[in-house]
Length: 328
Ligand SMILES: Nc1ncnc2c1ncn2[C@@H]1O[C@H](COP(=O)(O)OP(=O)(O)O)[C@@H](O)[C@H]1O
Ligand SMILES: [Mg+2]
Image: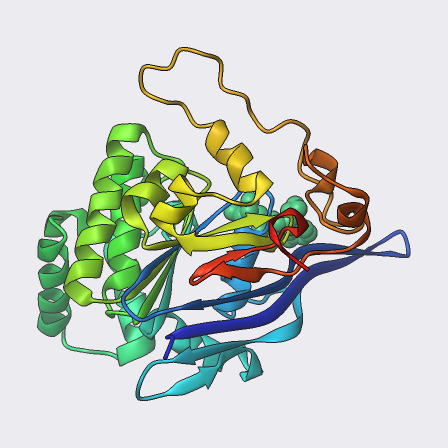
């Protein structure tokens, strides 16, 4: 049984401007499953809907974001939960933090700039476990920080006194202190320099190993996916266009967009200029007809311009949405 099953999810930003309704189709019919204990990666250019997908899947639904269709089912073993059926944000908040947790891109969105770090831990723990004695709280946080190689003295600091890397480590510590079943990490390394990025990836790996949780890792950085993930989904314009084991994506990519992404990666010793993907991602308000990638696809046919290919299993565990690869 997968721990997470997402079925035909559609999540749009719906806004009204000057009397006209705008619908940004950020997640447009996405289905995937994540198995317990695995690291599932989601990659794709900026603006393709990765963050929106994580928000919708973890029930972080604030206007103008709305889920129009689909199901998101969690199977925690002792509890099966359809998070979108929880109408009340209070109920969803109880699930988030305890069973599902979110490591956001910018640490400052979870750390309050005018409050000491300790306060963020106190608030989170109180919200989920109720008030507890100071000694018990300190013991719990110290143990967790120790395991992550962080020092208790950081608790007294204000966020601005710490480096970006340290703040991100603390955000990770905060997101994992309640030992969630699933961790969603949204570009956790993007704002950091390469050396610090490495440390943060190692930290995420370490926690995952110790706590044995399931991790969903979103980043546009394919090198991080190669290093970390078991399986990888490639998103383009609100849809998953390819999904397979990470080695298969890197060694036998099938979708023309995946090929384009991989071609733009630098190779050691190769001094030729890398070709970046030509053209730009489409508007998610006025999406192209047929396959959304057809305006940039070197192999597009009339059929691709007309019809939208489904994400179909090409070989066991390898799904591709392309008419040129046997799609329909
Ligand atoms: N609050 C919002 N209102 C309207 N459109 C939004 C909002 N947030 C994001 N979008 C749009 O949704 C699309 C997907 O964004 P996002 O999920 O952040 O992509 P990614 O994480 O892959 O960079 C983009 O076109 C973005 O402009
Ligand atoms: Mg994003």
